[in-house]
Length: 113
Length: 112
Image (cartoon, rainbow over all chains, first blue to last red; front, side):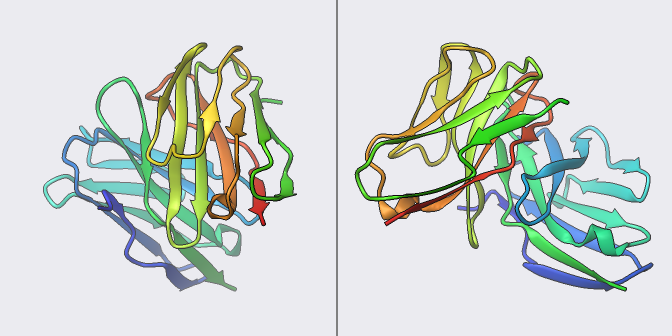
């Protein structure tokens, strides 16, 4: 049973417009959420995170929103740039000390010039 | 430069031939982990280690072993590889179990 779901395998956006990537989760014990970006032939790199006690976190062009009642988070990229084209993974961390991350399947974002 | 390194980057082997994929980090991180990435399945955790001599199973540990004898190294061992272990493997580390993880560049393994 998937605990972290990214239901859109791919997304195509025009340069300069907003990209919205969505992620749903089922486990209400998750206390921390992260977004990673992955280019081909490279490892995932951390992008932005949010604690479950917040509903928004912003870092430059990237904003993550968390709706705990809906168990939903989204990543907004404004404005989108061709260099943002990559696979984006949503990850959630369970409570406790282990810190295990559970990843979604990823969404491939293509930003067209 | 702070980094996680993995070796080899690419490996083709045959069923049953034992292999080890090395992982090393230079950030003095306590937490290290191994993931595999498969098409349509995302990243799944194989094993993790909270500190030296402390390891535990992740979501897909079958067919794998790990060891953590030193803080910087966390090798992944496949005692008898099988074709279903053909995958892209990533090692990751973080300061502590609850921190953001830094990933290595990946090891693409093919078992024939």
